[in-house]
Image (tube, rainbow, N blue to C red; front, side, top):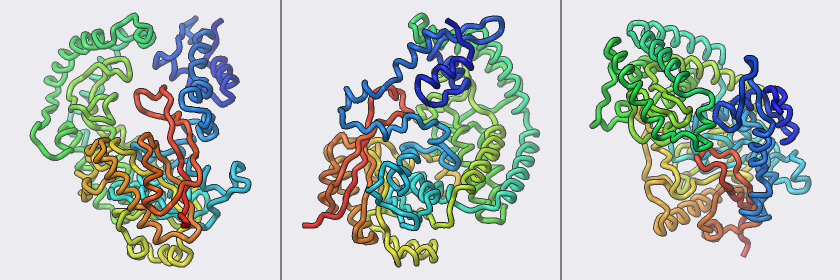
Length: 524
């Protein structure tokens, strides 16, 4: 039985009890997850292919079998669409390792039905996140009518969080972004970049249509085509065409191999010139808040323009300056030669996200401090940054903590935004990171991690109300948090083990969980 895209989306929506759109079905077709055929010019989906795919995604029973019956499936937020997990300012800037806003809301919102008798935070309370990251807790606190203090050792992380919850004259921001866009277009017009890029895109499209048809990914998944071998062969065929075009348009693709600067290592010369042009234009904007908003948009732009493959955007294995076979898209792709398209897209998208958040944010205070949570004096630092907010915090104290410390040996938090540190001149404090990737996961690294996180909670307790509540999101596969709680003078009241469904790693289909630890002051 064959279904139209609309019929397929309706069928899937009924099976999953959530909205599945025709666009979602198209995505599954494009990435070879389900089959399709073209019938009289229209795309049709075999019902059997849909049934096969969605039967693999009924995960609750399988995951509980693997991870245990204590898995709290409610906290999976399985029926929440990606548009909700990345709503408004939550997707203003990419960031590894952030939790979804629904998880914060679940534990903070006094009106959540789940908590009928267990209410930990109420409107106008103050929440602390000592590992603030990209500011998810700050944003959700604002939505819920709560104040929030964040702390992060990464100056860029603090910049992201504060930019998300900032207040802007959006009309002025739009006007300034348009001025810079117009100037960038004039700047780009002086080169042959756009003409070259359009010609390359046209030739690539013809090539990919011939060698990588819609059925290619399905054939790879079925084992009918050796993707690595076939992709390498076709990549080599197109390279000659690419190099001829580069020579014809005299495009500079030379990258220095000995530079210590990230911008020189990972950006083509033409990209670097455009980034510098926009950066200089932003620095001339007199309004400070508008300038910060534009800087965030530029950071988001340049992250998308690094000279690497689409599949390695988050890992950066080696600079790529030629066309290449792309495992992610199943065809030959090209590097970026201009930031113009991304800059325009992100200007529009970012302003729209601030508009959407503006309808939801409340008249409360949120601010992220840059500092070491093990030693920082929150009252003193906040008094410098926001005296009015500091007065409120000192008067009523912080009600509790909602945070997700780094997972030991997983991410180098400064390094993931190295381009921004290089361009904007933020001071790097890599040596103060707790549990970074570069220290590994060995016994010594775990011991250092336990001590570091415990010291954070011990320091933060000085600023908390007497009957505080601490919620910590962690994947504690090394069973470190009982020791951390004890060292911090706390005890674990409860644990909520949740399945993590919206992962971005390559093994995202495998069962994976994290635990939300609820901790309180130990009364001996």
